[in-house]
Every structure is written in C-alpha cells, then in structure tokens.
Image: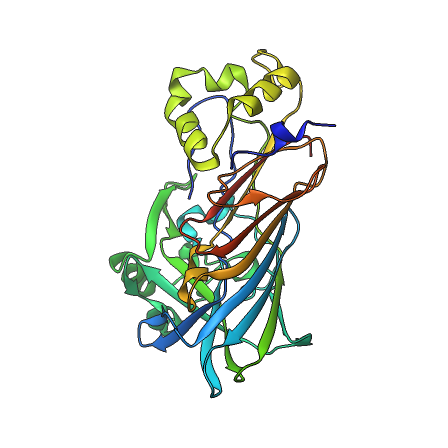
Length: 342
C-alpha cells in the first residue's frame, strides 16, 4: 500500500541521451468542441448558446471514457457541428507509435453515445505538412493519409515520378540508406483526425454525450526519475522537463529512491507509462464547466502517479485518485505519469 501523499501529486518524441530507451507518446486529444468545416478543415469555434453542465472524465491505461451533460441556454433548438479531435499522428515518428487499433481511420476504436444510444459519426481526416493541407495530393496519387500496418507506403515501389513529386513537396523525407546503397524515405506529414457529428440540442433540455476509446500510452522500460539517472548531467534538461510537465514532488522522488535505491541498474524493474489528454477545448462552450470530475486509474495501488492538477482538488480517500472542480475553465492540458511495475 502506498501512502496517498506519495501517489497524489500536488497536481512528441524526446529521446533520452543515455541509459534509457523511450517509446513516444502522442496526446490523447479530447473534449468535445463546437466546430465548423471549412476548406482548410475543422475550425474550432466558441458557442454561447450551449453550456457544458458537467464532465466526468475517467482515465485508465487501457480505456478513456468521458460523460458530458450539455444544456441549451436558448429557447430554440441549436444544431452544431461537434468534433472530438483524435491524436495527431506525426509520421516522422511512426515507427515508435503503437496504434491501439488496426483501423487506419478510427485508430483508437472511438465510440460515442447520445442519451444512451449509439450515435453515428463521420471521421474527418487530413494530412498536413506544416500549415499546408496535402490530403488532395495523396488522394490523387491513391496513397493513404495514415500509412500504417498493411497500408504502409514503400517508397522504393512507387513510380519514380510519384516519388520525386512527394519528395519535392516535403511529403517524403530522406531516411538513411539501404544495405545496397539506395536512398530510403519515410513519410513526413502529420495526419489529423476528428470524429465529427451534427448534434441537435433541444431547448431547456439536457443532452448526455458519452465517449470511450483506447488511448495510445507512451512507455519506457525504465524511468528517468531513478536516482542514478536523474542525477546525470546529460539528462538534466529532460529531468527538468519532467518536473515541470508532471509537477514532480520530492515525496514522489523519495518513494522512487526507496524502491529503486541508487544502483545504476534498474533492479527494481520500475517502468513508466504516460498519457496526455487535451482539456482546453472544453473551454469553447458557454461559460465554464459547471461540475468537473477527473478519475485516474493507474491499474494498481502500488503504482505512483504524478500530474499537475491546477484548480482540481482531491475528492476521495484511499487509492482512488479523484479530483473535482466547480465552474471549471480548463486552461491547460493533462499530462499524466505513472511509475511502477507493469
């Protein structure tokens, strides 16, 4: 059993310089947001007609679920395009990303219900190089916007003219040489995906919306916060980033040291898991979220958890990590670090 004071914090690819291999994590994009479809893709907009009365967010390593209650503040029905952005996939890091699903479009097995019934949705997917939308070019060339799994692009098999065009437009990036001395390439765009639906909010009535999906979890077979690693001058900048992004406290470090000691080897077999969740789009509705609740399930009472709670306050005793806030206006996203044996 771990003391709650130790597991409760006061609440895209970075490579450790030495001693630690790391798998990248990408943000679990989150929070329904009002949006509009434009030529450039989804544009998230603020609405003053509909308020988010409550949000109940449950984050676990294998499943994220969220339950919203929305209230129409007007006397007439309000129809909005509602979008739930899925994680951006930076294909320059694709080899390090383990997608939860084999579906190249709904790659996190996203599901939604409205007032308890499954709700149809449309997946809006686009490919971007910087601020340039290159989706039309990829479709013209009959290439997938998310080339993973069985849809992987083999640059060597492409016609020379196609390959040259993709390289010239920044869609293919040099990626070393093959054993026989041929130039290799890797996709260089970012795939942006959102689950989109038209939602009618009747006047003076609450609409309940539920989402669930499988997150992609960043993982490392060790933790940079072990004593022998965090005291390394080569890792000082990375340790400083961890302290800031996850609000690492001395009590957490003391518990890690108690478990792992100061040995160079990771004899305690501590590992890391990391989840990011975008909260800030929850601020696009009329007013603040009237009632917000966050539950974090690390998957075991002996695992250590750290994140930055901001205005969120612990609301329950024991090992369940629950935090609440009233009139909550998200101004930062969640970055959650879990350390333990997996």
